[in-house]
Every structure is written in structure tokens, then in C-alpha cells.
Image (cartoon, rainbow, N blue to C red):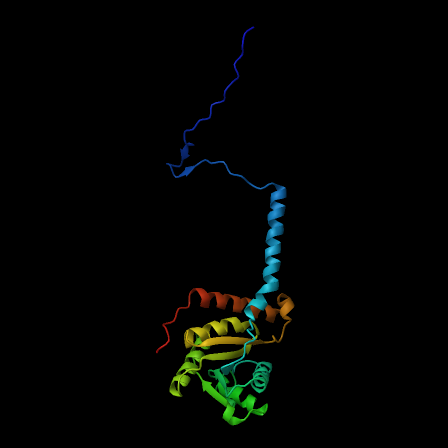
Length: 239
């Protein structure tokens, strides 16, 4: 009986032919099946939903560790200033410092020309004594207003005995994480900066994407925080 040898298929190990003068080469490509696309879509939707639910709590950071000097950003709404007043009354702070630059609107008709002075006046109306409230106005700038306010506070501290070991910052909602980062950059590593975020106004922080104000605030703060974290590198604080 004649023995039939099995056929052996040779695999050409030579490289695939090139085209377009050697600029491209033919390769095999694996693509998902409909089940694979369905799984990828489910994963993408899960990641998107998780981001929508967690981004606001991330931006509106609160350390909950009071101590040192109390600082409030004077541009915040009345609820933010009132929260700073309660914080001062409930914990052993010596003084509350109010930061902020020139008012964006109404300054010619207003008694106070900066948000620092306006915030300080609200604290006095809420019952704090004049000797416990210190306005620290900042110059008018177009960019990096929070950082410039923190620099003005650092200069005030230097002119009055030096910075404290720590400050506790009160600010508005989703601005909290970015404010803490900018104040830390301005004051330097020798000053510990903690923060309390006042509740958001004008939108539900659990469903911020359902209102135009919530979308503007959260997306704007997310972009601004990424910019500060990745690209904003000011010179180190003066000794």
C-alpha cells in the first residue's frame, strides 16, 4: 500500500509587502465582535456614570480638620461667609482672614471696593467682633485670582510676624480642591492648608448635570483644576 505523506503548509516568514514607496505595510488586525463592542460600550457607560457621580465630591473637598488661622474667600456667597462665621465661633481661632480682589460689578455704587472688604463686613453683621476679622484685599488681575489672593495673604502674614503653621480655608463648593492647592502653592510647604467646602447653591450637587449652572461650575472647575495641577508652576514662595 502506498503511503501518503501529510501535506505540510508552509508559512512564509518573509515580511508583508509594502506599499506606497515603503510607507505602509499590510498587517492583520483583530476587531471586536458585536459581543465585544457591547462589552466595551457597557464599560464606557459605567466609567462615564462613575465620573458623573464622583467628580463633584472630588472637587468639593472637605478635610474637616480645623485649626491654625481661619481664612475665607470673600467672593463666596452669603452661605459661604456664614459657614466661616460658624466655623470661627465653634473652634478656637484667634482671627478670621478674608481674601479677595476688586468687585467685578457694582463697585462704583458699593461701600466696599473688594470682595475681601465685603466679606469682612458680612462677618461683622453676623456677630463677629471687629478685632477678630481681618480683610486682606488683593490687586485686580485677569488670571490666577485665587493664587494672587493667596500671595496677598502670605505677604500680610510676613508683615505681621510670619505665617501660621496651618490655615483652614472656607470656600464655595466645587472650588474647594483648587483653592486648597493654590493656597498651598502660595504659602509653601511649611504651612499646612486644609479646607471646608460650603454647600453648592443653584444646583443639586448629586445631580449637577441636570442644570446649566451645575454644568458650568463643575466642568469649569474640573478643567481649571487640571490646569493648576498639570501646568501651573509658579516660582517658590519667598523666604
